[in-house]
Length: 163
Image (cartoon, rainbow, N blue to C red):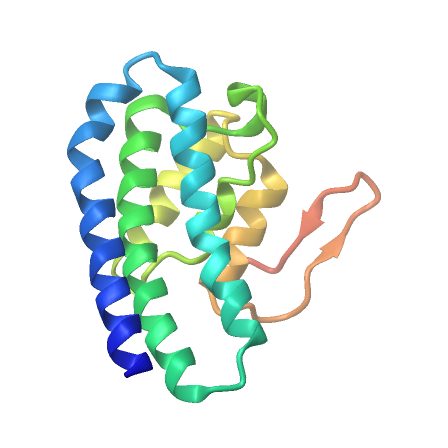
């Protein structure tokens, strides 16, 4: 019974999120407040279920929640790729809001990883995706091999030769 509830809830969430996609382009046109609201929701969706999963001890519920999270990750990454291509990466300085939007890129589904790496490299070169976040996301997408360190200038250093 609980599993059925989780499945129905996940279908409802996915449907409501997809219906918002068509509104995204219309509302983002020079509307910073809406963009902040949308990105805040995306970051919340990225972290909320992951936090809940970490607290669970029931494998069946965990598996069901991961299915929901995987769907949310796909929706979030498509939205964030679209926003980034259209407006450039929405870093906190550009938004004038303390959002960690880069976290969403850490959870990029496999089929989007190559596209995201290319996009983030361009955004990093343009100065819109900061070095520390860039290195951390590439490290995360590359399987988190080795341990990151920080150099004397406070820059995160990661062996990215295999990235």
